[in-house]
Image (cartoon, rainbow, N blue to C red; front, side, top):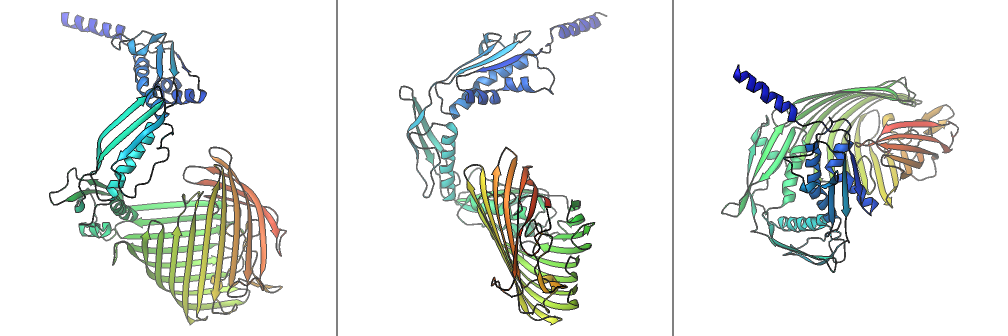
Length: 598
């Protein structure tokens, strides 16, 4: 009984002296600089507790602990802004937070005041980081007279260390530093001494993790350059090769802590697979295109060598205004690191039906080829294929069979593929074909050029040029699904879908053998996630093999739109009307999609 009584007494005491939940309390920031005050509040843990309306009310000890932690957070913020002589007071109900013992916290907190006198801004004075690796570029803001930001000094030091690493000195480090604040002159002197360490070569690659891919294939895909002078770019390339396959969920490289006696540095690759199979289903609806249903099945490692088998199917044009219903099904087998490290081999089988406004085509094709990743921004693909089709247009029904030799080169130097503000994109496709019946030998050429330029901080100018050509067969003998039309969201907004072709007579319209498309957009950012766009599109279709501007016709459209940035690409809403052309009375057209129009 005595033991139970003591336990009950202890429990009562614990409940009695346990922390009370704090009632609502006020947080204020006092600083002469309004912008700085806002940044201080954003960095403050006390303010975060105050502003978190979903969390349970904080206890007084929670508030006190946050207030005491805020000294370091505010100092770090001020140092990074160039203030090295601040006075900071954090008052909890009028008492300095640093002087309050956490063992005896107040029973209640009513207010917390963050009072900051930042003092003068300091500038960089005598600064230097040495020794310097050849080719190391300067860091913006790290120069005498610039605001002395700690983050800039840190970035400059990291850039110099990386410069040594690119020269093969994998273990370059900071050997010493001297940072002096000259308060009368409001200047920070900083001298950082580096130890480059020895120049190293890449040693062996050890592979760990859980992967169903054979180790021999992992090494083929990685292309480990054993014996080469250490370069962090080589490690990044190996990681990219592994991740590019789509087979691995993680592919991380870790450098050994110490080099080997022979001057090599070993690296460990930790590789873990993604789930081997992926299923996807999609549905899209457009006022013009109608309903599109799609699905796919992917096996990421079907034969144990990171080979990918992708089967895709799509039904499009349901209740749309682009003709009838289109069907497509394909199967593609890809194998990375075939014949050479950055060469991917593929085999493709596809069946497709296109029921368009101006033609109908049912096509079966088979192709084998390679995709070569020449660099981060250059890709080249080559393929040999066989294609047979049955087509129908205003000239009647035709059947053709051709052998194809395709080449495609892609150069992508955009800063963002979904919402570019600078750089350019270029893609050229050449497909010579040899007739095995139903047409003549020829060459299909396509060209897509895009460029982007930012003006100020809010305006982006975007331009696009498209070229297409079918040389060889006459207009009457050319494959109907190789010919070009203009009009619609992919070419000229404001004009009807495929509304411009070649009129052979009042009742006979076919596609052209030449095509030119031009688009210009002015994109203006009006808010954090919102932008407005004005655009003008023009398109040309001609019967000649190569554009001469004489025998065909032009049409154009003009419009405006808005973009809402979702983080994975903007949602696009465009409205356009015809500006010129033989059929410029189609009225208002509306286009909705994800990503910029180009």
